[in-house]
Length: 161
Length: 166
Image (cartoon, rainbow over all chains, first blue to last red; front, side, top):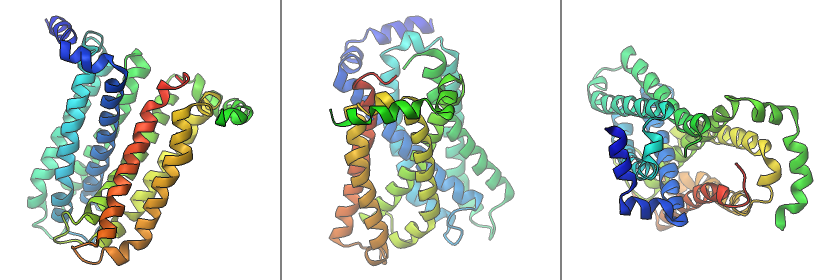
């Protein structure tokens, strides 16, 4: 059933137009890569602050308020461009284990980012950030690195993309 | 072609033991790529935060100079990782990279221009970024840096569209 949906998606005329022309396909890849760099770099700033090894003299909520809008904006660009790239070759991506694993890692990383942003005002009320906050920041950082690694493993393992 | 004189160097580099080891390993190449991308993420993420702050956005409780100082070490650590990963990726297929137009424009024109802009910003940040409101020159420099690194990413994505690298 998933493959049938993938097949329909792949045959959509807008998807074909966007992914089969050289310049639009390159444009999608440029948006996907650039937004990924800004996304992961921005999340890393907040995570490193939560862990306590960046800007220790700065309030963690200030970092969060400044950085998170860019995290969500770059995530939106990354997801939209990534979805269109996926749709162009959906029947090949859907059954690929490495791609499924990548999506799982990205999903967990996004959930961790939501939890970190949600918890920061609570953690910030105590004079020292609790240990569980630092552990969560570290796990989040590792998952975002994992997302990058899986992003490059998909073409390396399956030859797609 | 501009890079054709570099072909002997590329040939020499890609036949070094470390380059052959990466090329022959099933797992090393993706890890080197991930190191390059993680370094770029740290570099661009920290650059982007300071550039946006130079545009006067989000400076209510933290000046651009304070933000830049807090991110300084991680900014250059990201750059070091990006260069290390990038050099290793380059060395695997150096002979084809040195004649690739997008690669030559990226490394010969865009990266130096973006890097100079970045260094100028870091030298000027304590003049431009002492208060939440930044001068017009700071806004121009911040916008220029965001644009230049976007151009670098564009050239990088276009590399496979040149003479075949992969």
